[in-house]
Image (tube, one colour):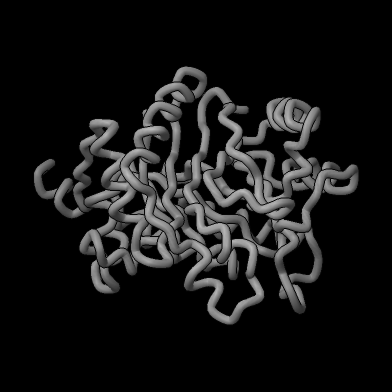
Length: 280
């Protein structure tokens, strides 16, 4: 099964998803979403409870890990220690797990998180802290996949139970990773599209970098190439969650829709209220 969705559910005006419809309107068009608000702050559990109520029973969430757990946090950590931080995050997303809508928690590490013993130990520590949750791993430093480290990294992920987050992103050494088309979990694989805007990717210090870093629209030939890749990847993993993150210029929605068409995926979700009405 291939599920295709976007990062966030608002602001995708090109596919009719503005600021008013919320996640209920989004879930009528896409079966999965990446929640990134959880990266900036540990969300109250009531937020996830609400989002679960407003989505169909088979809807899925990819939840981005809090920045304090991935090494992105700048400034003071609001938690007393790591134990409290991990526990608070787990409690926060518990409503999604209980509802059966949690696909995975995405740990996207920063570009300075390179391949060394200390960071390998940190990955083991993280996995132990959230042992009951499905965790996806995405790197941003090429050292994890350089030369012989490629197979060693993938074997480590398989042994430790990490879901591979496969990326399509600009190739800017060392702060990016190549597209490595290999599943490390037989049940789930994540594929994220960040665009191919090489210039913007390599200049994060510019004032408006967030507005341009993901400014890229995949053309039809590029998406056809990915159709072939996804079908091949599907032979080794039961479910693939595809997330389009190239929304600086509003391209994520149209690209997601085009890939769905190329893969002959038809999806029309129903809001929970509609389902209840027809089940009476």
